[in-house]
Image 1: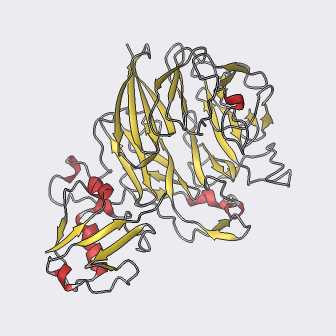
Image 2: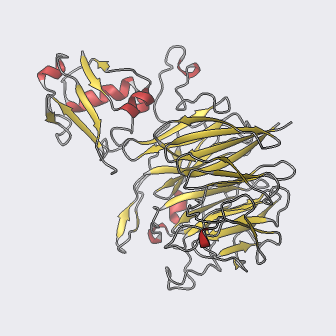
Image 3: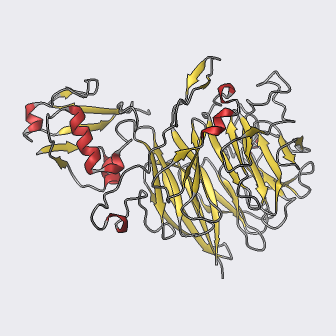
Length: 98
Length: 388
């Protein structure tokens, strides 16, 4: 069970409290995790990645196990501690705007 | 007695203000979508309880929200509890998708180079006059999208870009379709306005468009006096009884056209400044129009620090200042292009919102004003519904 923590506004939008809990079929990669988030919570499509290009939105960042995964390619494997649910995958709104 | 419902989009959420026909005692609900920018909300003329809202964020992008109960509850279209019942009822999540069709091409950038079209947000939602499930969205970068399924899916009308889109350029606020006018007498005719491209008209329901900017003068922005596109049109308005007569607040100049945009004539007359953003028409008097003069494009606040609406009862040229009840000293707010509206009561109510978070109402056509709320976030848009 993979745990995902969304920023406040996206939790409100998806109407979830606390963390998302997801299963991934196949290789557990950053891209597969985002696919699973959007499959289970379709309202989040377009809020993390562009609808068409699937590029990360500029002010969205991904972190896990003290590592910034934002710039890693979608095929990057998730850390083992995220895959086994020990650590959450953090989706963060960048600190920006003054 | 009638009920008035004011729909206010702000920098930090949406607010709904209601009052009876006296328009004196207001109830306020909100913020809806707290913390998000809500560029625009508008109710359907065919079903006033159907309201579309554009919720947007620099972080998280574009969300379309819809209410079917007059703003009490909201859902992203296709995801209401009723729509999720039963097998196969999983939401598709397409209501937020605004994808330009085909090769969108490029438009002019600030430095004169060509720049690819990039969707940023929905500025304006214009519901159909007859079908609650049909609406148009004006978006940045400038395009118009249409839904026929209540906002579940949106399709672009790419013919607009064929009207010399490669020559359009963003204004300081971006390059957006910010105004959509539907002709109540001809469902195939629509008008849109774009900063900084100009005004455009379709006669075939949005498939093809032509620029309607003849007579506009933008000497400092456009050296070519005959430029067909590139004008910074801030707002256009019409009266439903005479959809061939258009009024325009341009970056500078207030103008009118009596032939559906074929030719424009300046009617700024004795205005203290002909720079401004909104323009609107009295509900019962097609030649009575309203603007809010702003000092200049460099100083976005009222002349002399006095907030005054100007009214012309002659369709332009001759204007009177209306300031009774509005702050007449030390006022340095702005009034944005989508932040003025009228109701259909007698006498006609006029409403506008400011970047300082006030919404003002005049229940008598502009003679007297009162703040119906004072401390909201900056107001981006104001729409008014007159309910039986």
